[in-house]
Length: 339
Image (cartoon, rainbow, N blue to C red; front, top):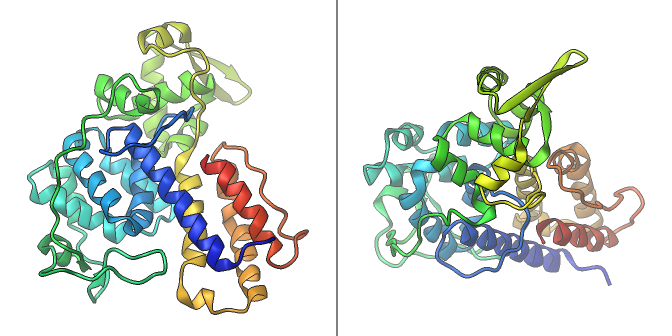
């Protein structure tokens, strides 16, 4: 039996929140979530996604802030801005407030520059909501930093329980390379070549969300080390690690331990689906009109975003399935994606 939109919306949000807990717990956020995921976690894409979906779980949201205080030096704010802009993440206003929290704690000029964008909305809005869209009311005065950016929430009280990322967890390879080499495009280049084998500068730039010139210059210099090789294929030059088994030995990885996932388009696609079905106005539409809007969203970019992620997902055929039956198969596909 196909689910109703209300049932679909509730399970979809639960799937996303469980996914977020699993990913953040893997990198050191206080919590318990088992993970056997075969991918390296992209911290910038995950943070951008959390600024929208994390608003439905205040404990998760605050534990992520707690983790940021300890690990913020391994976050690329410039790449974060690029990810948000290129993929159209909608949590930019919340992200600015998060940067304001970091700046108020005297953590890095990079956060203060991000926070300088100020508030985006003329009126204050409640930060946290329940699954049914009801706001979480305040107890006492609102947090002053978040209120300065137009968000109302209870005063922030970080528990200090989140830890530094676990360096030997395979999911933390992205952060581990940054700890080893510094926060730069070279970490993403090494990670992509280690996991995927061989790629050109244009493809590396698309997959890692750096400018093409940045990647071209960095990978060209890396090839001078002898640890990265290059060869011409047609009009493009392809790059690879000269001895990937030595990198795997150094990083204590089994061969094929990780798969490459291009996280920004995947997470922005999931965010777009949620923002389509979440409003109360959408819930009041006739079911056939709801399905029409959802199909339109999938056709106009969401399906393509999921395709660019590199994760294979059997998305339902929007033209073949009639009425609410489309929801059932879409939910199955999303379970497979997030699981």
